[in-house]
Image 1 (cartoon, rainbow, N blue to C red):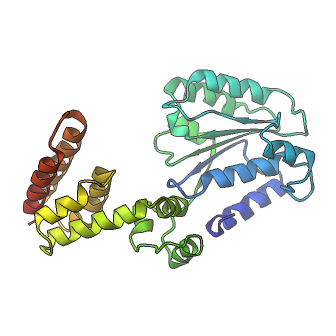
Image 2: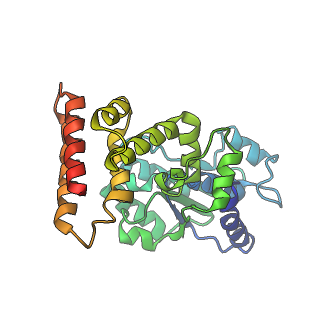
Length: 297
């Protein structure tokens, strides 16, 4: 278990040992914080039949690790939404008797994908949860879920991580240099930051941020900046982050009209990137950066 999750693990262990764990658990936190790791560990602990949970060697643990545990249901959340049929299936599953031991567990990732009808159907299950059944949900934010659903779940907010200890953890788990901005870009999600490092995307981030910073500070000319950026994938997302982190904070509260103009400029450029087929992207990027630099002042 990653070090920043150990304290949550200990709290859950105490609740398990005293039979105080709620039937509905909602884990929220930034992408890459490890909500799935914590939820899977909790599911393993609930299903384990040994005294020290999870043991990893009992029949129940072996079945779960093989992906063949009859008392564990993992809801498919790979699509754009989670519909009412999936919730009806999990409700029926939770009503049944456990086959391996006393508990039944449902894992539901990306809970924000629940449709309104699905959330309402799930609410009925949470209002009168079957005995020894547990629903473990996780999502990047609980604010997108209905208040009625939130009120039926015990909410656990997994805090974003930005400290030097996490920087060291990243350095220990990768042979690549860890940029100072990486955790901030990953919104405090160390596992997402590690993924960016290992995929090489962090290198692209470094090139993009470095080029834009030099352009806005007049250290390089527009043509050189555009040449470095035109082949970068996900450029709009990176620029959006840079605007929020570095350019807009200095203007907010001092020049709201300029802030609005920058938002509109950025939104228009992102829209045109998607909607205008055959657009000269190099020319569009040049025009965008020229106007952005003018608005920055």
